[in-house]
Structure formats: C-alpha cells, structure tokens
Image (cartoon, rainbow, N blue to C red; front, side, top):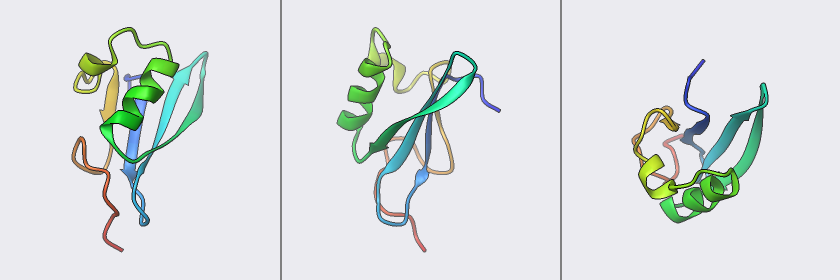
Length: 76
C-alpha cells in the first residue's frame, strides 16, 4: 500500500490511466487521465492546493507500473 493519497495506475490497453484518491479510509476513483492536464483537474477537484507541484511529489502522487507523465496505450 502506498502512503501517497493519489495513485496514477498503469496505462490501460486503450490509453489513459485510472486515477484514485485515498481519503477518509477508502479509495475513490477520480477518473481516467489522458494527459497531465486531466490529472491536474483531478488533483484540483480532490482539494490539492498546488497541483502543479504535487504531480512530481511522491508524498502526494504515486505513479504505478509505468513512467510518470506517460498516458499512451500499454502494450498488449
């Protein structure tokens, strides 16, 4: 389990990455991000004050099973 409240999951086969937030003892799906812009919108909606800085801060965001800022389709 991660200590970062936001998790950007592995790229999907069709592209994009599922984004979840851990809040109030449970995980909630924020949506699927297809770009850093989408992810910033999710972070703002989750109440992150400075989402631009949070993107690369492992205290806030964990990038799982793929490089950070990569949203293209996963190899099948």
